[in-house]
Length: 260
Image 1: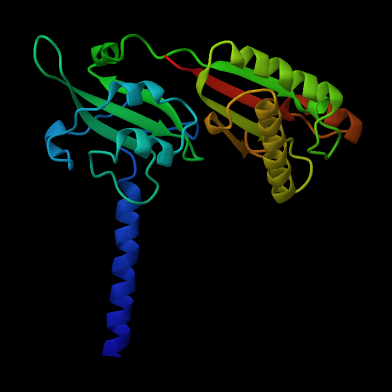
Image 2 (image 1 turned 90 degrees about the vertical axis):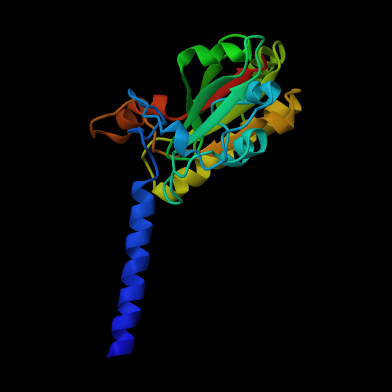
């Protein structure tokens, strides 16, 4: 009995630890899309990375929406505050910058969406954004009609789809980009699993076509969102009418952030 009680206590403690860490995953109230109306800043005196770091401006300028945690880790290093191990969707850094007037200390926050992709970036104080030499460049966005790109249920680009992707590649090639995020979407007709798989395959097909049209492979990521991010909602009705109504949800979105 003592052994059973001991095992139960150990397991319960483990569960409580996980729940505690999950609760510490975010300071701010972060939406599923990686946004917040009120960023909450940790106490700068409680940074776990000694007293902060002196970042490389070049690496900071490469940070862009859609990046993974691994990509950000390679650019900026690990976060500087203890924000938990489970469900973390918020990274905070304490940075120092050399200026003619002396060192300037800034806090930098990155918020992630439910897919663990970086989406929002904040400076405290806001004037620290000027350390990068200007505001973050506005990303280019393209939303391509899935019914033009692909035949029904297919992940092979049609002739018209190839032309559409070539047009986007031409637009992207005019500026150069630090990141290009390709996301496939479906409507809700069909199973969740099949829709997720189809959206991933379609995103990969568009990525391959962009590479074939001269966009560097190392800046492009491709992922599927399935039916999870609809832009329209339709009432049930005859199948043909429902398919037509849901058309805007069948798409491939491309977000490209230009180099500074």
